[in-house]
Length: 262
Image 1: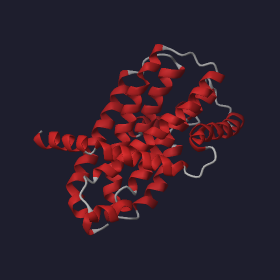
Image 2: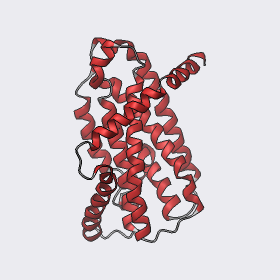
Image 3: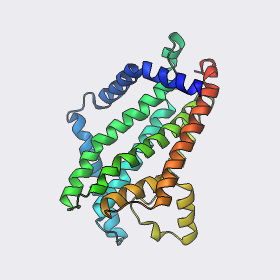
Image 4: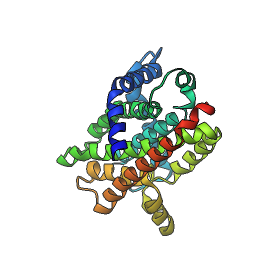
């Protein structure tokens, strides 16, 4: 307990560094871009339009408010993909700095995931536009959206810490993870309803895919104007907590060896 409190105090001490690293990543992403931050809104909108034109005509899924259904899944999954891919290089990409000065190494992974969260908040402008054009009813249940986003953020942070420390010792993790992300994309109901899958696969996705539960919670609050079921909420909360604990412990246990490999 004492170590945990000390680490939280250390995190608070370096809060300004985290802020600066997040701002640096955001500025670098949009540097020399003519539209700048507007791309955070335009990009998900354009991707959603393309996916809508393709999947709504090719497969004709019977989904209520398909454009909103699509952009919710696309936006949340894009955040997870961006956050974890950025986290993979958060330690190896800052090797020169880590060899010169002492800062808590987890700061770099934390800043990458937090920066992706800021990009997600920008992207939600596109989501809002789609909601308005498709006449989504705004309800009090939407006030619980930050709870879902916090679950997703903690899950990505835990997974990011795992990937970051693994990439220090095993550089091929980035290539393996890119293949896993491709499979993960198609095994998450982003552009199709889960009912399209065979019963056995539906059960497997429900049991083994945290992203399904985060996206389902978000869609339930927005599109169906009701509370997510308790099982989905507890699963999402537990997976976020489990990954944060495992990711943090694994990272802290191996961080003293990073300097030998970066």
